[in-house]
Length: 347
Image 1 (cartoon, one colour):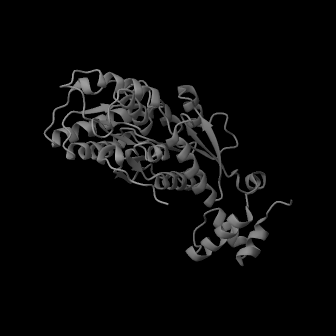
Image 2 (cartoon, rainbow, N blue to C red):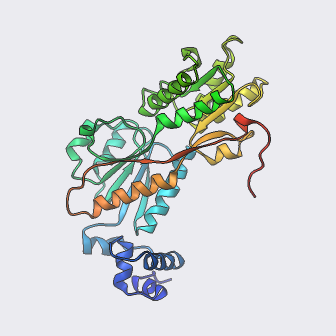
Image 3 (cartoon, rainbow, N blue to C red):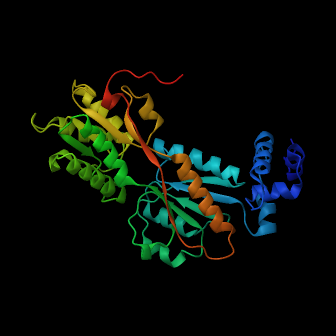
């Protein structure tokens, strides 16, 4: 089957080839109605830009990379789906990279080393630092995802994130509002990551606002944000004396919460009767767990859109753009693991 061309898309959309080119390059001065008509034709025909031809014309390949710690985590798998969708709408092709938490691999991708075909990278790092990025900040288009603490003067790269302090505060306030008084946190001390620090901060803020004190015994450390560590941490909490054992737990990820939920079940206890549980990520796994898991939902469509558009703007700009931090929305989904009852999934 012959490859779909710009001419094919133009004929389907009833516009000129130049208009189609402007749309897939995200050029300005194209009306929203025309842009939507062209993108509908792109989707219907399955048009994909030719990277070699594009690179000859523009010096760019139209290829970007999304690099995440691991694709087995539902959050990152969902994120990859949304980034690909947003990139396709801008005529970009996404390569998915898995850093496997390797600092050297993060730095290689962040600096564009060995990435001659890539126009830019969206990276969700665990280790790379501002000091490591500063020397190449203006040389290779890069957008970081996830939590970092910056002073304005230290911002050397574009960044897209959610407000983790507020997210943790919202989930913990929800648990306190249910009358729970011994609220634990699972996710602290994860190699002192910014995510862990910020979610612990929001957790403690909510406790203080509810007139509750922070008990270090109710914040067992975890090595990673995965199901196994959630299981182990919850087992440790359940083994505490009855007057200390938590009646609610805020987990710093949905995967931690799913593991914790398993530990509660093993102990013959009830969720939420004995222990209410809440997580963060808005994963599909949380929706289909039994009971369904209350979770803070980051707007991944917004995260992906902000990241892709920010990277595309930096790739296509002929002048230096100021670096920015973009904050995506989040919200709390109250489900069976905290409010009880049975809530059928929408048909």
